[in-house]
Length: 197
Image 1 (cartoon, rainbow, N blue to C red):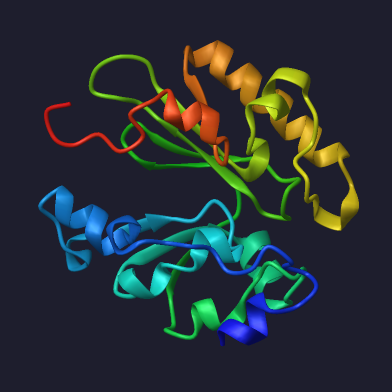
Image 2 (cartoon, rainbow, N blue to C red):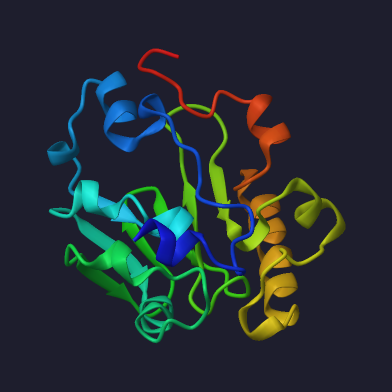
């Protein structure tokens, strides 16, 4: 499987390097949890670097937008790895924005993919956090309102509209915007707080 997905011209950077400590099961263990303790997962989109670990929580409900699930089923671009879903996910399909649980909101932010969703989370203390996903994967996407590197159907229009939507929502809710793949941003934050931190 590794050769099929990673050793081809579409992915010249090769497979991701993940240490055992970085795996989902190890991170959960640091919190005193096991994979079976997770009953709800939100996938903002289904590219391999976001959905590749779903096999570890195959028993859980996986919340996703209907357009995203359709794009994955169609193998709409090279970053959907069908083998990531061979375990048979328990899909909970959403047709629009919704409150998933009290204080947790799924926000439609298409552009990077057809059915991309971001997540607004109200915190017990402090400001809400708006997880941008890959709608704004780098800080410069937010600062300069530039589309991420990969856009659905190579169109930046939806992506830029979603970036502006995220910024407007953050302003209205006083939420912190968290870009998804910006290492400089994450080095400045405690991106994996342990209990009591």
